[in-house]
Amino acid sequence: MQLLTNHSTRKSNIRHVTSTFCLVASLFTAFQAQADELLVRAQEIHDRVITLDTHVDISVDNFTEEVNYLTSPRTQVDLPRMEAGGLDAAFFIVYVGQGPLTEEGYSTAYDSAIAKFDAIHWMTKELAPDRIALALTPKDVRDIARSGRKVALIGVENAYPIGLDIANIARFAERGARYMSLAHNGHSQFSDSNTGEIREGGMRYGGLSELGREAIAEMNRLGIMIDLSHPSKAATLQTIALSRAPVIASHSSARGLEDNPRNMDDEQLLALKANGGVIQTVAFRGYLNGKKHAAWRKEYDALMREVGKEMGVTVVTDRRQVFMMPPAARAEYLASIQPVIDRIANTPEALSAPPVDVADFVDHIDYLVAKIGIDHVGISSDFDGGGGVQGWDDADETFNVTLELVKRGYTEAEIDKLWSGNLLRVMGQVQAIAAQVQQQSIAEVAQSNQ
Image (cartoon, rainbow, N blue to C red; front, side):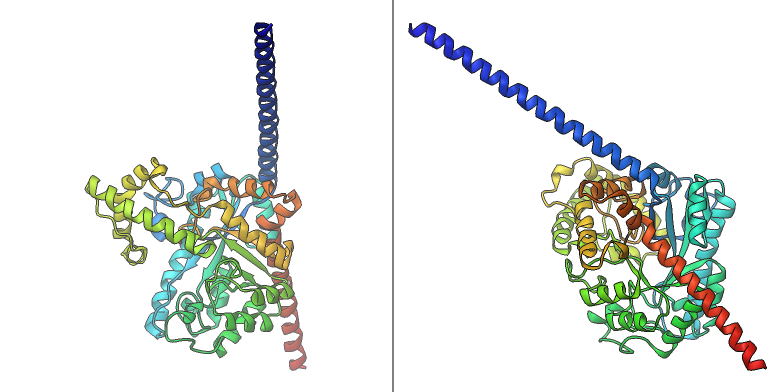
């Protein structure tokens, strides 16, 4: 009798295990089907919307016959990467660092800016006009994207190269500039920088200078979007109050999540919303989660030095020191450490601290959408200027942003707004207001001549 009972029990246990296994297998199959369905849906959305990144830095050294955006230089963005990742459009940046407020400083900066304008035009007109074209209006963006080509736009980071001649703003507009910030790291002739919060002995003007106020009126007249990502908080609020058109923050995140002066606090965000503008959330590790990034960076730098020593390569972990190298020396250095970077990338388990990733980036999008609404938030990377997170560390990983948005329940219409719709709306409004301002000016001139 006992034998029968044990046999019966064993059969029951077997049936139970088999049933459990079948249930787990069924659940796994269902989960995998849902995951596959989500992936397909995200890819379809990604393919349909226009993905636009409002901040990609460039170096003129990558716009030559030998090294360019077809030959895949050591950059986070080039044409093959844009095509692989489905990044449809990017603002390529005419950036000149802040220098002395002297005639010589302005002249040197102007020449540097013109060289970057020329590089972008060379890419779109001579290097690869069949693969990328320059857009000047929202309609251009849509038409070029529809043609299957990538879209280049031009933003100016730091108005310092304008010098003291406001007429240079029109010259930059003629060359294709469609947004411009009045300052960068350091106070310019136009505006205080947010860096005044932490260095440079405080602020210079208490916001905008008189020349800065003139520049705002001129950008409104010309249809150039005003970028608030680097000026001080006071300058930002004064700009919003003065501007007749909506403004943008081309690459900033939420100070409510990461207390960094490069991010916008809630007061600035609400002013931006009232103005009708848009903040382009930036995938810059230190602006998303500074504490998390610092812990990861400490481990990563130590490992870079250790592996570099093993491989006979000198590693410089001070990024500012690398940035200040002459272009040729910097390129040579970056090439020398690439084998070290590759080796570490192939052994991610060597680092225990997690890196800032796409989820951290979209956390800021979530915060901004909750604070000021879906119509006032966009996306930027700051690629090749320090930006990039795990999962979106170059243009060929762009789909991962869309995927994370889909995972969090954003609809296609909302994702379209975040990727490009909001920015193109603001761009169109800025240009429409400029047309009105110009008509008013013509009418005023005609009236004064009567």
